[in-house]
Length: 152
Image (cartoon, rainbow, N blue to C red; front, side, top):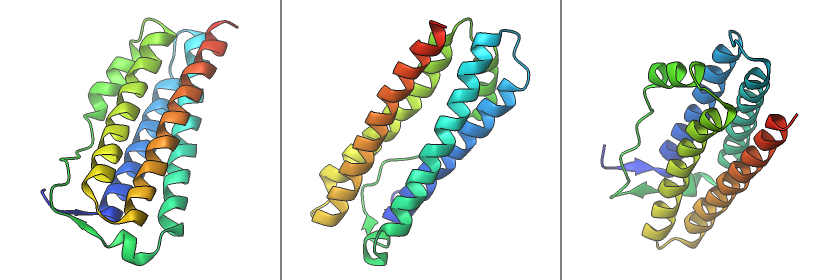
């Protein structure tokens, strides 16, 4: 789809975080290693918090901002979560599990950055810059906390 509204992008991002959180919870229900279970549980909670933050951004944004269309919006499709479930379930270590999730966050930051650069509207630019900063901050927080769990 070439045309997307700001709301479409925010809805997609919230859905991605929800699905990643659901996936992590599903994997956490059946782990063989206790430490990896701690990390996967943490990943699930982390994704739920990010989904809630995106929803709050959406609720706080004026309708005019949310209804703004992008002519050259990047293609944004949800990943194959069945494949990701297999990858998370078979992660050999904490770093592999966290790395999979970090890749999604980097993809989202790239989309936000691209959209911020495309717009001439200062409010929309600020919204996407703030969302990119939130994703980057949470990505760093995720990595740091995963390292703490690994060292337990």
